[in-house]
Amino acid sequence: MPIILRLDVMLARRKVRSNVLARAIGITEANLSLLKSGKVKGMKFDTLEAICAYLDCQPGDILEYAPEETPQERAGDRDTDELKRAG
Image (cartoon, rainbow, N blue to C red):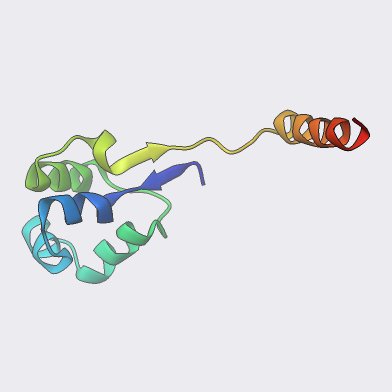
C-alpha cells in the first residue's frame, strides 16, 4: 500500500508509550498496535486528530505517501537491465 504509517517513529521522538497514547485518545491498545504496524485499511479523522493533538504533530509527520512503481516504470527497469547486459 502506498500510504505508510510512521506512528512508531513519532511515539519514539515524543518518548510516549503506546499504552499511554491509547488511553489518552480513547482507543484500545490492540487498535493502536494495528495502526502502528500499518495493518489497517483506514483511520477516522477523529482518531488522526486526537493522535496529532496528543503528540503535537501534523498528519504528515505520521503519514507518508510512497507510490508503487507503475507497469511502465517496471518495464523501463527491465529495458535498462537489458542494455547493461548488452553493453
